[in-house]
Image (cartoon, rainbow, N blue to C red; front, side, top):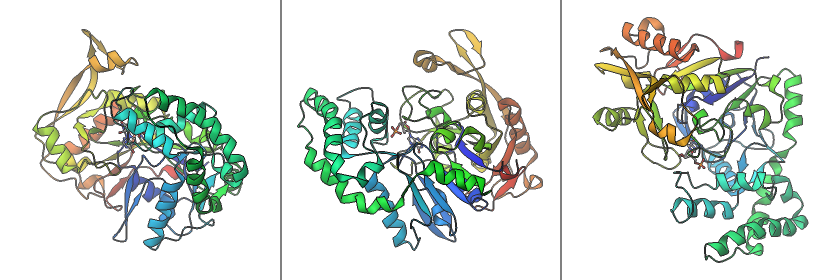
Length: 430
Ligand code: IMP
């Protein structure tokens, strides 16, 4: 089985875009299986910059089939807008190279407004979401009142489904003292976009099964990171989907045997956007410097990312919850020139030493990191393409990380350029 799933091993923004783009060259099919247009990555191909939120990375490469699976929450207007933007950049997007699962849940204006309302502080805990309506759409999915892509193919069935959904949402609106949503407006919102998205609709489970049986190579492209997983992450400061590798099976309709090699992406340090615990966060000039050198600003929201040292305890845990076979370590060059570098190797919790990240919100907020300090390197790792190009201390840092997280570094990325990559193991040959 030569398939590969790529997942973030921290809180997202690990640099998955470059790795997925690099792997997509070897793949026949690229599949998104969770999240929505809360994700964001920038691909630079032949000097052209492409910004993607919802579409799988394969879409910018001719001859690849891109698939949006049932596990994704789909804003049909965002999809139509992204297709239009990329078409304007000369990318051809047709049914030939893009398919979207008929049973994917739709994100509507109702969800975006509710997300923004909660984030405004007037209702519920502020999570620091991307305000794209992701959480409320997943709530409707498990609440069995969602509108799904296939419903747009039968417009006569929509009014009843909209009423069912609005029974819930308008009760909330009344509770907040807000105007109710109009069923007609929602009908119009959906009917107007139906012709733009329906051409891509398909039974994705069957399509992927056919592709797999035909021996095609499938690349599953995760969004966000394992610590934002709704079960395994820093709940409630998480996204609303399962982001761990196992979701690649559920969110695409291909069984777990089809998933193959799990490549976790981890930055050589740690970042997070939004609220929530972050034990190794730096509040001093070192954190500022990492943020500046690493250009740590969100692609989707432009927010400044919080920065800190590499937390090996967290990544060891995500190696376990995602079943990671190997790591792609990114942005090592950002640590060039530091006199000393710290690695989080465990925590103190209420006077005890622990070697895992506890599950409770209170304990997660109370843990204090235990650090190991290693000597930095004065040479540059930027642009290195072989081990021989790396300063000895940088190699020591990578080896120590491998030891601490219990997984090998399969790929080392040393700059945003796709060729600045040191390959220890090709995941497709795993
Ligand atoms: P939501 O996914 O918009 O509901 O946001 C929930 C949490 O996930 C917030 O902390 C967001 O900042 C975070 N999040 C969502 N998407 C991404 C991403 O692509 N990268 C990093 N963090 C993300």
